[in-house]
Image (tube, rainbow, N blue to C red; front, side, top):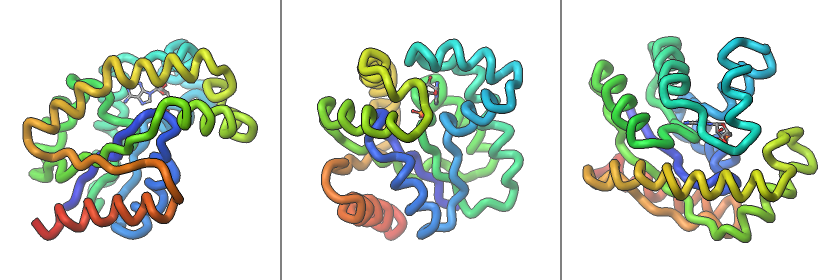
Length: 193
Ligand code: AMP
């Protein structure tokens, strides 16, 4: 099994790059943002609870997302590996994920962290908001709140994986293909290691 985390602020290109990475490496894509939006569109109780946080650009409580990831891992018994996108976003989520993966004897191999400047992120997200139908992509204040939330809470996740030497930083500005090339180089270096 090869398990990786694709990490980076909102608008850093995680969704686009995830699609390309799962095709190349045969991984199962688990995006907590996509799972939550699916719960909302099905109007489940979990979705309704999550929506209150998401509309403000705040994080959904840890136990909600950890429960969702746990059942998604269970539903993909024969996966060759997972690409976690938008998860973990707190140190508590990272610890919970380690425990879930310990049961499978398949730890996280690498956390790839995309780096993009704040101005570029706001520009990309406002543009995405014109077509994505995502309400959290149309308001600059909410976008800045999400980026701030990322820096406040989520960088603790990078510190967590840094202890185990599992973080590779990747430049997230440039062409989609160039960024993909850098991500693949970082993954291949870990596979060969
Ligand atoms: P994303 O699609 O990854 O940008 O996530 C959209 C929103 O979903 C975030 O702003 C959070 O409100 C929520 N969300 C997604 N993943 C997580 C997570 N791992 N922990 C907490 N909240 C999350």
